[in-house]
Length: 314
Ligand code: GLN
Image (tube, rainbow, N blue to C red):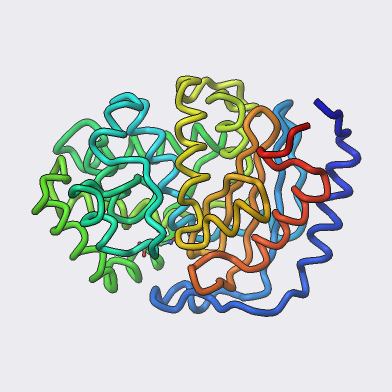
């Protein structure tokens, strides 16, 4: 209920950015060769308000690998195509407390992949996207959805796609294990390839903050006015993000920031404050769970300065 002005939001964002920019610690992801070579000093912070204003600070035009943040839009698309109840039944909505690439995400939960926001459930989500059996049309649906959520198109980073496809042995094992438990609903190599390709899309923090704001705005993109998904999906996808968005560090993150957010090993973080705003930050060096050190620091500091956590009683 407390009123925060745009000037206060701008100032808090600038302060949070300045405080975090010289933080050391963390390292670029190195298990995907392309990511190891990205400039570690890049740093951007973007905020999109629900009236369509976008605040950009730092390297907000740099296109980096969306990686696991792509799990969010594809979970939304699966819910839009099949309904939120079906996604719960076919994938699940539980925390795993495990690393993003754990095969135990499948084995823990009566052979359900736990949640669309870890690798196992995300590969299942790609298998659920319609039209079944048509790789090109499924890919188009995935990219069109991201384009509508961001209000502008993402761009495939070919070198990243090749780098991931050449090294994704763990994900290949997950995909076949899912098949073993009847949790892949389309061709296995195709579902895995769609997952790998969506992870290799390049996006900017500015675009991701619009995506976050579209989620915060019940599916209506605040820049374009486009109604991208049904309003009942916002609380469902935000609950998934809050539950598992930082993998085994999710509880610590939620406790200290109060803000549902999803990370990717490209260094991006997307934060959703339903009914208030969307936030995104990017800096390549990651902590031990694969979450950007500076992006976490900046978003946490920003949210704490303004008392924006979803658990705050104001
Ligand atoms: N493409 C990466 C993988 O599947 C994404 C992981 C991530 O961003 N946490 O390993």
